[in-house]
Image (cartoon, rainbow, N blue to C red):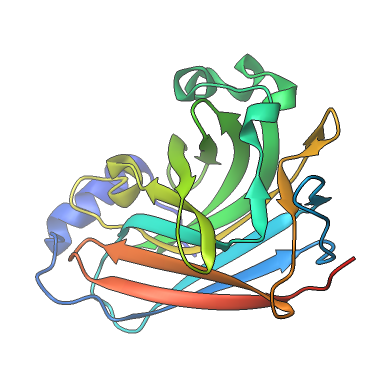
Length: 236
């Protein structure tokens, strides 16, 4: 596939007349969750887990769009302990990963975006941020230079879900070139780690033999899609 430089992309946009579309987003959305152990610990001593989240967005037509916000909901038996870890700020991370404490790094992954026939492969590194945030450093080299920090906020949820991660997507990732929507077709990240005996992600129980997960995805036309997944679990 031919790669376009930034000037070439801008020229292509001007020639083709790309602009935000009034047509509704038509896409399939999925989420798949993988846990390393799936064997529960206890409320006082949750079992250390490695949590892998794979999100896929598959456009069903040529209408351009981007994801504006993602909210991930985690089963009530899954617990996060960000206060036990060192932190890095988004400003420091934007200066370079060497500016952050190594002990603040809690995961990594990959992503892929697509716009006007071009595919962008991305590297993702996850850091523990202040005030129960997760920082996702997203970088890529071709066809565009991408270097952006996504800030996700961990908070409580209700019902079957004990917590949720709200992730607004920065404007420069929605439209890496003005007027061009970039569809994030794949986002795969694994978070893990342990500090002073406390896991970043822990499993404290197993209700009914399954853990429930959900994602809601808001697109640039304000439409919302929901995807769910379950993972088998067992008690100690």
